[in-house]
Amino acid sequence: MNLDITNDITFRKLRIFMTFMEKGNIARAAETLNLSGVSVHRALHTLEENVRCPLFVHKGRNLIPLPAAWTLMEYCQEVMQLMERGLDEARKTAGVGQGRLRVGTLYSLTLETVPRLIMGMKLRRPDLEMDLTMGSNEALLHMLEEGTLDAILISISGSELDHNNFEMLPLFHDDIFLAAPASAKLKSNDFADLRDYRTQKFVSLAEGFATYAGFQEAFHIAGFEPEIVTRVNDIFSMLSLVQAGVGFSLMPGRMKKVYESSLQLLRLAEPYQMQQLIAIVFARNRERDPNLLALAAEGRMYARSLGDSA
Image (cartoon, rainbow, N blue to C red; front, side):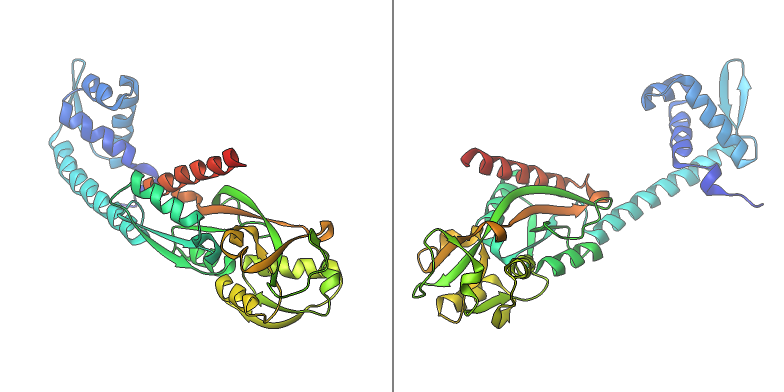
């Protein structure tokens, strides 16, 4: 027999059939499933047609299961139990709805944003364990696409994100500053015109980091290639080199609280001003994951608190 099960026999029909077999009549089955009696009768009738053998007999207004129906019922129970186990195992493999949430973040967000989100998540879901991975914008997005991370906190400014596949929850905008050693002589006390620092040496993040893209764009507007002494793979190392006098750099404003007493910081002049939009990003097909729902709710509260304090 050539039977196309995927089109002819659905889980919905099997669920209605099983409920009818358990309840004994159409009215009680319809009430349990919150369906009309007509919908239940139609599902049973089409299931019988799809199975291609008699399952019921009419006695007056009642529908009486035949032995074939009880045989099918036994296998339906096995199928449903097996499918439930399969769905559970699939979710475990994907890390969905389990007691662990794998979150990726930019290094710079570990100063304030990530700790506040973690503290809020601990209140919402005390038993949830959060695994934290730090990396560049590019690396974190790649890990999210591969499924090795459940959510990431990155700059989405200028990032090529597939809006059909990813949900993005904005948290805040962040300005970029010129960072200079404490001993350096700056041209202004207000705004930094990058053309004034053409002869200076610079320290930069490596390609793939959000601030690196802004760094390149700013100097492109300034019309010259800066002399980059070294490129590093985390923002703390970069700013430590600036503190040591190795060179100047550009840094996001979220680092100011830690470094404003040990570095000279100037907001960029008008032609070079730019912002990073920091957001939580996760796969759209996991938007109903309770752990991600909790993270999104905490993210909204965090964004709201920044707006209130602005």
